Length: 279
Image 1 (cartoon, rainbow, N blue to C red):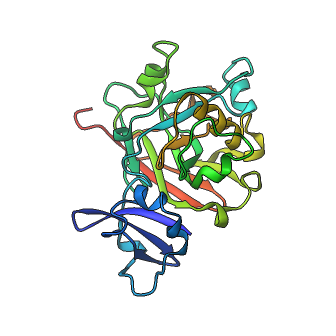
Image 2: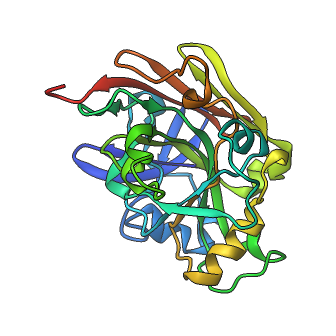
């Protein structure tokens, strides 16, 4: 199943994508996608008789518009660790992103007025369905509601102000999340897929998920060891090599650019870049 969040009229909505149509599922039973993901009956939802809207007509929202937590993982591909000149990590490097920093598929990423070092980072997003604490690696994938594309954009100069990444990861409009969530039964094995990032049509990143240093089960187990994971929480699993800051000369996103993150088995997350007003 593919589940998409969008705006219908002035109201948030979600539905199941079937071909070029969206079957609207939001309503009294499941007011929000997060509430639907907590209900095992969602997998058996009857789409007959639902309101249908053309996919091309919807205004997308971030897959989970208001996640309780967005856990991001740094330095989780060996080739990215090497290009950044860092030692190989012994534990996952975790930082947090604010929900209000996100934009949806088709919306513009925002180049900050106080930086020109806005970098792309194509990543796999994991959305938690079944909540838990102290989850074992063996049972970790039972807690996954689905997978989506993410562009975890980095404002590199602010990211490097201190050893903490927070400042460079939370500018408004710097994290793109979409276009939709694909459930595990449809996505299949994580290691059978990979991520590709394109900037203005040119491939700038490409990697299989077999190259992850800490795989999804390991990340879920580790994060749930220090924080309860709740339905709708998001884990952004890290970006492969090829980032702009590591290139010679550096390659950063600028106003007017188009950036795409594609994950086979999910689809393409596409965004343009525009300058922050007043820049």
